[in-house]
Structure formats: structure tokens, C-alpha cells
Image 1 (tube, rainbow, N blue to C red):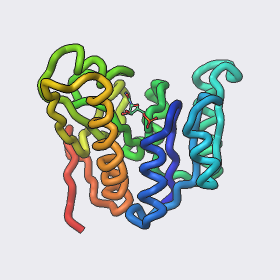
Image 2: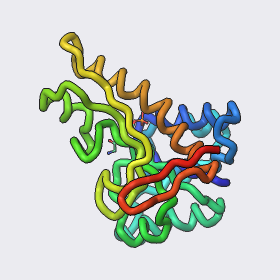
Image 3: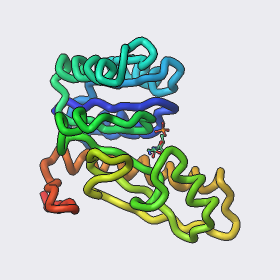
Length: 201
Ligand code: GAR
């Protein structure tokens, strides 16, 4: 199975996926990084790992449709069967999501449906919740929404600050996302209504 990761920033989740593929934990080919930001750390990581990069800049496209058509062309070239969004800070159109329905995953740094959006960690910390966490889910047409595959809770302790909480969240993300991708690749995920059933090997 050919996988594409979509990332706009640092790419630490992308790195965790690269490691899991290299170790043989995910038995698939990490074929492509789709990136919209020429300054993204994820690009350096892809180059270092010998992974193809499709840099698609929205400014160079006439509109969202054109932007997504360019991405789709790269996905078709590489025969991509699974898309893993890992800090891709653009909302995909309903048309794009429908085209790849059931084949797009996303990671979010909070326990969905709480604290959606670009600042999940900060928003949870600022709200003062005692428990937050990480969610990996199938993507549907709404933002940070869709059938949940895996979630893990993280306690916010009295001594925590935003930096320590970010560290805790990222550590869990780097374990949880490769695990969810492995389950998908092994054909063990089945969307049933609003939820996801995980079968044994
Ligand atoms: C991750 O924390 C991911 O959960 C978040 O972006 C970060 C990307 O970090 N995604 C969202 O907030 C989606 N709403 P990374 O570039 O180091 O993987």
C-alpha cells in the first residue's frame, strides 16, 4: 500500500511514521510528502529519508479547486491509497474528501470533539481542563471530525505548563499515529455508523 503524508510544519509526526515504516511496523511504502509550505521542516525530513515531495503552494494556484487538483494529480502518479494528515493546516474541500472517502486519517492534539482547530493543546490548557489527549480519526467533510479510531488521554498536572503539556501530547502522538496507520494497512479498521470497529489480526 502506498501512503502519502500531508504536512505543513515541523513534521515530527511524519518522522514517527517514517521510523515505523523503516522498522517494518507499518508494512507499506511511504511514497510521498504533500506540503503547502516551502519552509516546512517536514520537507527536510522527507529529503533525508529519500521520500518524494510534492510542494503545492496555494498562492501559485488560481483557486482551491486548482490547488486540490494539483495534489490529486501527485496522488494519482504515486498510486496513493492512504492519506495521513499530520499537521496539514488546510481544510480539504468536501469534494476532495469524498474522492478519498475512508482513506484519509488525521491526528488532532486533543480529545475530540473537544478543542477542534489549529490550537488544540493551547485551547485545552487555557480552558483549564484536567484531562486532554490525542485523537486519530477518519476525515469526513467537517473540520477535525469523523469516525474516531484511537484516543489517548493525558492528565494536566498542577505543575504542567504549556511547554510540558505539548511535550506529553507529542510523545503520545508519535506512538498513536503509527499504530492507527498500521491498523489501517492491516485492514483492521471498519467504519460502522459513527464509530470504528477494530478487529484482531
Ligand atoms: C500535531 O500536534 C497535530 O496533532 C496537529 O499539528 C501538529 C503537527 O506537528 N494537528 C492539528 O492541530 C490538526 N487540527 P508536527 O508537524 O510536528 O507533526
